[in-house]
Length: 271
Image (cartoon, rainbow, N blue to C red; front, side, top):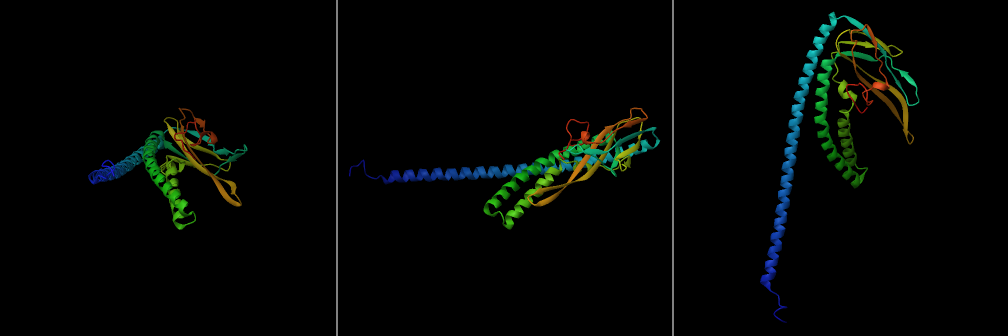
């Protein structure tokens, strides 16, 4: 055997040591990267928690301002010269059938009070939605992993339920029900008759808002042989002003729902 072909133990040891050192370096770099990821995640969670805390405080302040403005508007309403606002609440189906909505409460609010409230609610929703979307991504990944392991297992069902729960909560901030849950202390409220018609006294001067919500049973849809009841929900928040006139007509229909784009509705929702 020539010297060239002989094994050099020192060289082999040096190469092995270099390989170990490289491996140790990669492990340390991976640990450092994981540590940084965890710290960034914790920082993001702390920042998100702080934003939510501030959003809660801001919303409370908006609700207080809304209540004060509404109380002031109620006092002014008592002695104001009034005209009448009348209209009809109805919806049309895809088959062009009109449905008159009776027993719907139509409420009057001061425009400045509503503006404060809606701005506060929109800001609050803009904070809650991203936070819930992040949780939804985690829940979706967990659900997919559980389904892949065993779709019919208890763990998989629990993961799917958790995902749906978070999704429903997130989507609620896009809905009219979220905004209407805070609409209280109306200046005046009337109820539609069997033909969906209403009439209410409104001050001749000033800017106001009428709000109404309704629902209608729309039949069943079938998934295979399983029938699922469908209930449609409707929401309206419309600006109104008599502008010194004695009367005005303002109908509430498909054309100005909160879910209808390009209308005068003060909010736009997904439902």
